[in-house]
Length: 514
Image (cartoon, rainbow, N blue to C red; front, side, top):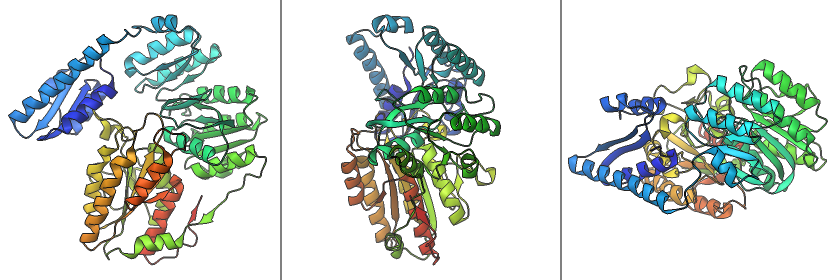
C-alpha cells in the first residue's frame, strides 16, 4: 500500500517523541528518500535494496527494548490508518472515478509521487480540467510536454512543485486567506507569493487570482509556458486591474519574453525577480519590486491609482540599539532558521552586502555554500524546508518544532548575536506555530542572560487576520517570549543588519526597511 508522505511524517514525529528514540524516519523508498536516508546515516543494506513500492521504517534507539517499542508503535499507527480509511466512505480509486463523482469540478489538484504524477496530469488535461500539480520530482521533459498540451487545450498546468495558488477565492495547498480584490498574481515562488498576497491584504487591497507556475517554469528548458498562459488569463480577466509577477531571476531569454509580454498587456504590472536587476524591468515601462514587501506596496498603490514609488523608512535605531545593548564582546554572527525558501533567499540578498557574505545550504554562489548543513559557519542562513532536512519529516511550516533542536544549538553558541526566523501562517501550516516556538525562544534568551549574554531573536510573521492561526495572537505569543516581531521578511532582515552594525560600532543610517 502507498502511504501519503504527510501521514508518514506524522508517524515519524510520533516515534521521535518516544523516550530513548534518537531518530526515526518512516518513508517510501524512492531513490531520493534513500539518498537522503544515507546522508543522515539511516541507511542499511535492506534500505539500499528497497524499491519505491517499499515502505521503510528506520529507527535509531538507545537499546533493543526501545527499538521494539518504536517498531510496535509504527505498526500500530500504520494499521490504524488502514482501519480509519476502511471505516469511512471509500474514496475514488482513480481520476475517472473522482470526475464521475464531482463532474462539475474544473480543476484537479494532484499530489502523487513524481513518477506517477505526470500520467494523471495528462489524463486530467485530456478531460479538459485545469491542473495544479503539487508533486515534485517530475522530469523536465514531462513538464514541457504537459504544459504544451495544456496550452493547446486552453488550460492551465500549474506546477510541477506548485505549492501555492488561490483560484476564485479558494486557497490551495500552502496559501493564506485574503480578500478578493483587483490584483492578480503569477508566482514561481511559494512563500514569496504568500508574503506578497498577505501584505496586499494587510494593506487593504485584495486578490483576483494567484496562479502558481512551479519553480522551473522560467528556466531556459521550459521557457515560461505556464507564465505566458497565466499572464494571458489575467489580461483577459476584467476583475484584474493590476498584475504582479514573482520569481527568482529567469533565464535571460525567458526574462525578455516575459517582460515583453507584460509590457504589451495594457495593464499596470509590478515585477519582482528576486536578486535580479530592477533596471531591466523598468526599461520596459514596468514597475520593479525591490523586495517582496515593496512589490506588494507598489501593487496596492497601482490598484488605488497612486504612483508606485518605493516607500522606504529608516530602521528604528532605538530598537536596533536596544537589541544590541546587552551583548557580550564576542557575539557577532547571525543564524537564520527558515521554513520558507524564498524568504531565506531574500534575507540573504539583503544581509550579504551589509555583513560581507552569508553561508547557506541553498547559496547560489558556490563560495558561500555551507559545507555541512548540520554545522553553521560564521553568518549562516538555513532553508530548513530543503530536502536535506525534511526526509521522513514534515516541512517546518507544518511542524515548527523541527527547528527547535537547531535553535537550541545556535543559541548556545557564545558567538551568535542574532537568531532570525520566519513564521508562515495559512492553510497547510501548523495550527499554532507561535505556541511551539515561543516557549523555546523564551528559554534560549533566558539561558543566554544567565551566561552573561543577550541573544536577539528576530521573527518575520507572514499571514493575515483571516488565517486560521489568528495573526494577532501569534504576534502576541512571540513578542511576549522576547522576540522582535517584524511584519515583513525584508524588515526582519534589515533589523538584523542594523543590530549587527550596532555591534560593530557602525552607522546604520543608510539601512532601509520597507
